[in-house]
Image (cartoon, rainbow, N blue to C red; front, side, top):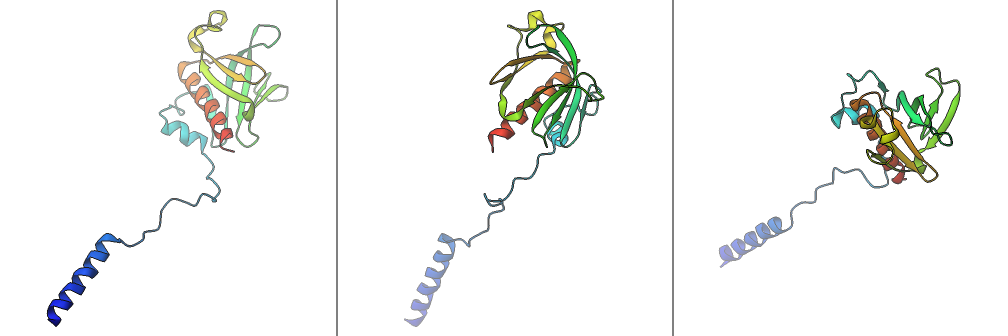
Length: 169
């Protein structure tokens, strides 16, 4: 009888250990932890962009720079501008040239509503319709032309990343 009682107790212990597995700590960081800053260059490379082989765009961990042709706001002429995407300042600034002396305008991340390839509405006026894309803010629509298809994809991805990153805060 004692052997039978011991066997039943052992069986109960075995069932308890199977039905209640040991608690394992989650490897996911706590929700209160500060999110790791995004490395912009690594992000773009992991997304399939050829950052290294695109001479028209300079990308670092926090910044993206390069020339784009932008359509004017009031006077609808196309002007070449030096764009600086700065994650630290949370803005996309554009200058008359790459010396970055004369600031011509600023687009803050929180103002970005959407970024899209527009081959219908604005592209017919564009110097290069297939390389034209738009950045829509609350106040204005910015139409821009990239020098190459890869540069256009990089810039669009950078701007979309800014809008998404801003929506997290």
